[in-house]
Amino acid sequence: MEIDGMVANSALLRAREGGGGKGRSRKWKKMLRFPHISQCMELGNTIARDYSSLCVKQPIGRQLFCLFCQSKPELRHCNSLLDKMGEYEVQSDEDRKSFGMQIINRFLSRQSSECVQVVESYGKRCRESLEVWHGRDIFIDCTDDLHEYLSGDPFLQYLQSMYFERFLQWKMVERQPVTKHTFRQYRMLGKGGFGEVWACQVRASGKMYACKKLEKTHMKKRRGEAMALNEKQILEKLNSRFVVSLAYAYETKQSLCLVLSIMNGGDLRFHIYNIGPPGLEPARVQFYAAEVCCGLHHLHQRNIVYRDLKPENILLDDNGHIRISDLGLAVKLSEGNLVRGRVGTLGYMAPEVIGHEYYGISPDWWGLGCLVYEMTAGRSPFKRQGEQLTEKEMERRIQETEEKYRKTFSSETEDFCRSLLTKDPRQRLGCRRCGVEGVKSHPFFSTVNFRRLEAGVIEPPFKPNPRAVYCKDVQDIDEFSTVKGVILERTDDDFYTKFNTGCVAIPWQTEMIEMGCFKELNVFGPQGSRPPDLDW
Ligand code: ADP
Ligand code: MG
Ligand code: MG
Image (cartoon, rainbow, N blue to C red):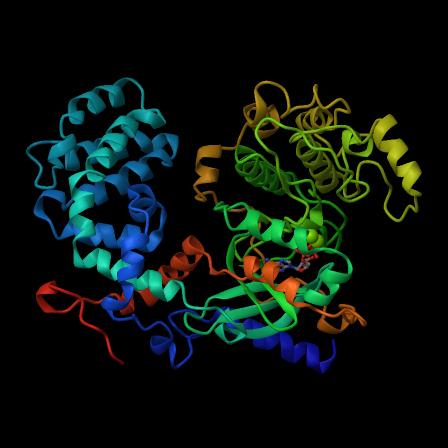
C-alpha cells in the first residue's frame, strides 16, 4: 500500500476509536447551544401534539418525558415499568418467567414501594398468565393501558412543563442548517454511480458516518434527480436496525449528500470472496440471512420493494451485524398495486422482472434465495466464477434452468434456496399466503429466535477486526470522472431544496444521546423551575 493510503487509513482508524467525547470539536457546546425559549414559541405553537411521536418515538422526547414523570410522585415509576415490560419481550425462554415475576412484584403489587397504581389491577391477571404460559404478550394490555393513561392528563401537564420547553430547545438545535462544516472528512470508502462515499465525523458529537455524495452535474446529465430524491425520501422514513439509516441530508455547491450509518465491516461480497476459500460457514449464512429477512420485512410492511438484493449491498457494522444499503432502486408500491420495471443487477434479477411482468415484493424473496445460495456455494446460482456470459444467456438461465446443489448445502439450506428460487412468484416462499412467517418458520431457521434477533440481542457469529479497513485502498478506487458541459440552472433549485432537509429527527436524537451530548447539556437550574439559558 502506498504511503498516502496508509495515512488515510490510520486517520480513519484513530477517528473510529474516539469515544467518551474524544472526537468532538473544542467548540462543541457552542455548536449545540440552545436558543432562548422565546425563540421556540413558533415551534411550540405549530408542533403536532402527538403523544406517540413526542414521548415514545423521538428519543430525546422520550427522555424528557421520562424526566418529567420522575419529577411527579404519582408518575415516578411508570417509565421504569414500560422499559421493563419491553425488556421482558426479548428475554430468552429460560429467563422470561422469573423476569416477569420480578416485574409483577416490583411494579404491580400494592405492597411494593415502586407500585404503579394506575395499572396495579393487572398484577393478579399477569401473575396467573405467567404461571400457565410465559409467552411474550402477557404485558401487552398493561403496556397499552399505561400509554393510554400517560397520553391523557400527564401528557397535557408535560406540555406545560419546563421539560417540554427543553424539548423545543433541542428541536431548534436539531433544525439548524446542515452544511459541509458540520462534518470532518476522512478517507473515501467507495464509489457509486453518481459520486463517492466518504467516511465523515460530526464535529459537534464525534459520531462517525458514511457520506454518500451525489454529484449534481452527473445527476443532471443522467437524469438521476428523481432517483436520488426517491432514495432520500424512502430512507428518511425508515427506522430499522437492519437497514442503513439516514441521519442528515444536505447540499454543497457541487453535490447532494446523504449521511448514513457507517458500516466499517465491509460488504458481503468481500467476505464471501476475499477471505479464504469462497463462501461462508453455515452459522454466518443463517445469521446474515435472518437479519436480511428482518430488513426486508421492515421494508415490505411499508409497501417498499427493495429490488437490488446482492452481496455488495449488504454491509457489516463494527460488531458484525448487517444492514441493507443502497436503496436507489427501492420503490414504494401504491396501495395494493403492482409495479413493472426491469431494474436490478443482471444475475440477481427475478424471472418476473426479466419477463417484464407486474410484480409486488416477490423479487426480494428471489434475491434472498440468490444470496443464501451465493454465501453457501461461494458462487452465484446461475454463473460459475469468472464465466463470461452474454445478457441473453444469463436471462435464459434464470428463466429456464435449474440451479445445482452440491454437498456444501445441508438439506434444509437446499430446500430453503429451492423454495425461494421458485420461478413462478405465486409459488415462491415468502410470496404465498403466509408471507414472511413462511420464511421465518422454514427449517433452515429452526435455531433462530427472531424475537431476540429483532431486538439486536443476539451475538453475531463473526466480529470484524476493529484494526482493519475493509475496503479497497484509496488508490485502487477509480477516480471519479468529471462531467463537462452541464450547466446547473435556477430550475434545479426546487429539487435541491426538497433534498436539503438537514437532520433526520430520530437518528440525530439518537446520536445526541449515544455520544453523551444530551446528558452533558441537558442540565436544569436549581429547584428546576425554568431551564436557565446556558451560556458557555
Ligand atoms: P450507488 O447507489 O451509487 O451504487 P452505494 O450506496 O452502493 O452507491 O455506495 C457505493 C459504495 O460506497 C459501496 O459499494 C460501498 O463500498 C460504499 N458505501 C456505501 N454506503 C456505505 C456505508 N453506509 N458505510 C460504508 N461504506 C459504504
Ligand atoms: Mg451500489
Ligand atoms: Mg444505488
